[in-house]
Length: 289
Image (cartoon, rainbow, N blue to C red; front, side):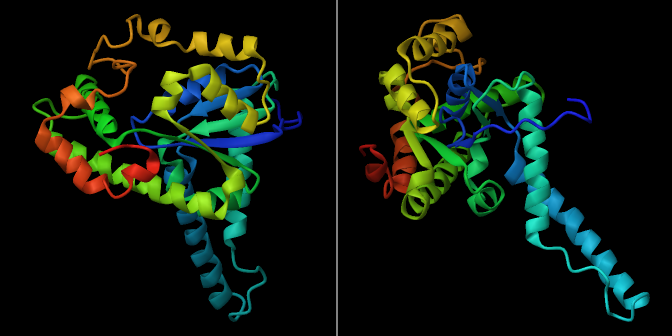
């Protein structure tokens, strides 16, 4: 995009969120495959970039305060920096990033998939008050199993030291994220229900075209069957992994393409840990104990 060209701003903005290893990447691929949508990931705008931006503004504010004391006899010329200045700058930065991902300016909707988009929805809605939140939920027992494979891949790429993974630590981390996601999801359902689109991984797996179409309708995208079917086929597990659903490969990002793996992959004691930690919220999310 040249300096003189106008910034393309889509009609709709959305943010995909959910527990890590909960299906957010699959949902991102589906939404990005729609001809009227461009969904990138992972921008980490709110959980990583925004805190850094706030620190810059806080440092700048200290400089202004010092100048006010030393130069202007504590009568500053400039008003203090407000949070709205920060969110305004963040919004413009993000709009530029969205436009760069959609260089042909084709999409009606621009989105970002970062699993932790749920962590600071106050800042998210201050930055994009018109945005839709697209939450995907998953059985916390399966999310824990999927996290095992993620830990193995981190070792494979030398991001973590080799050796046995600490399954109990990973299970508890998965549960902590799942509880955080569902606590914020419950709050959003009460406070901004019109901004929420929710799908369960298991339902998306069982009836992909229908559930995908429902999400697309909520974002104002075409729900023509040919469009939906083409996107679903482009993101099919067989095509992206080269395996049939159920053929597990822990070294692959696309582990098995199925649900319910916790029943064979977790010990009874490990299942007990998940249910002890998450059980108070599981029935409301549609998961039996």
